[in-house]
Length: 253
Image 1: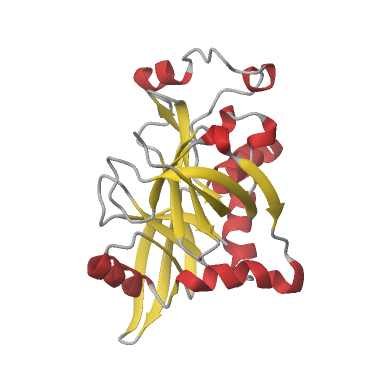
Image 2: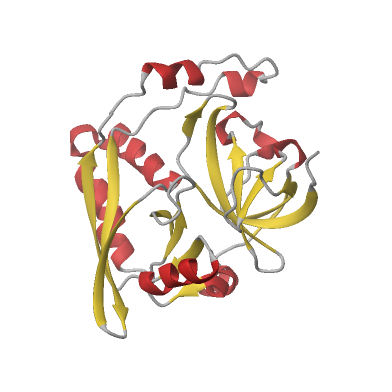
């Protein structure tokens, strides 16, 4: 029996969906609770939720969560999606002051400090601030869903509402996106490269394809390189379940 408890959670980001044998498709959501503890919420079939349950980034929700049996990362929790209640949204007033007060609870000076903390006490989520960065775009090894993945995505949803049934099938992004970035450390400048899994980056790609077709890359780069370089940018980093020492960029803020 799952030992659920209720928490109020501020949604930070969600990853681009992937096919799932049990849920058709799922996303992983990063959040922070009222006590300032980071949470990794999974599995969430976000696109298959009815509209009233489709929470937004920087929105407070209330939900039942419990520790999973097969994921021992300290931030990881299963969520009862049927229990989700949307509460309120954190705005951008006063230069995003309220948002930054939550981010700063888990901000590290550089990637090495975050990785050292993982090795010391096992944490697998945290924010870092790069000093310089550039975008790398590579063709995905498999630009289309495999036959097995397609089968997962077309499973019958016996209780789907008409709203959910009408949604466009999940498309695979045929490219992989990475940031090559630098961090300042006590010993000098360190360089790193990590893959971006932020859903908003995948959505930006499809928007650029729709609006600009063959010119999509220049507009895509403008957003992720030039415009972001003018902001006080931070990355939310998270590890991969099967490879606990491998990190991804889950959120760009």
